[in-house]
Length: 79
Image 1 (cartoon, rainbow, N blue to C red):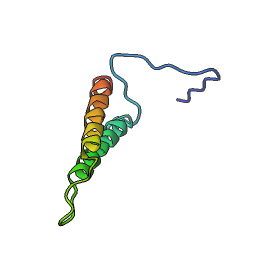
Image 2: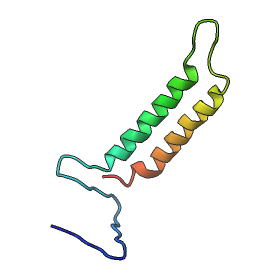
Image 3: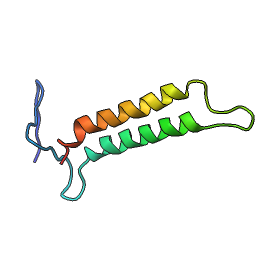
Image 4: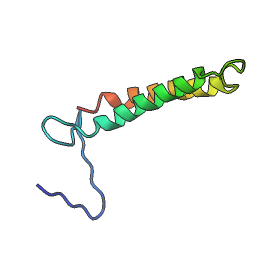
């Protein structure tokens, strides 16, 4: 089925699934958020001998927290 909308399109429901029966492409958004959080945590704890962790490790950790909050915002509507 093909759906074309000239002025915009809304898909509304308690949960949303876009993709095949076995794959919901919207889960890519959640997977990307998880990877972003993991990357931020790795950057925060990354160190070199005699240098230590980054001086802005707190900012990296805060980014990981924000990623988790963003995930929580959307995870319940993605089927």
